Image (cartoon, rainbow, N blue to C red; front, top):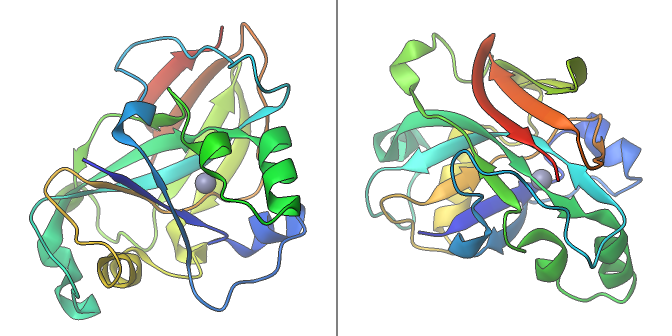
Length: 203
Ligand code: ZN
């Protein structure tokens, strides 16, 4: 499987990182080795002093598709999840400055938290989902999918024009504002419409 991530998909997060509003979705990939195995603790890698959490709504692709038209996108996924796009922000800043690819800052081992999956039929409107991230019991990020610049179906369509989507691929749909640094002994948990889909200890 592959992980396709969308950057800069919420205006409030674009502003907090002082990025430009993109004209098209910003897309990058994490390797499958980036998935944090279920139930395991996350170890802050030695090459970074500033790992940030980014909570994101996830979509799991259920069949092969390329050049998927937006109106047919719902046929390609049945499950919605929540995860974290861990980012070595200090390393990413250096790479961005030099115009180099971000993979080392975004695709390292454990950098993709993939929580429990829920059938999309559980939700009335995928374009109006509330989700949040809690750190040590305090809400640190709060988003709603209605605030995405590109909504889920548009993203599935857009991504499939570049990368053939396959069964089991996961799309990370971007993070809202409130990203921040993690430290050893932090405890993170994520909820979508009040339901907890993951919890992780930081080491
Ligand atoms: Zn992200």
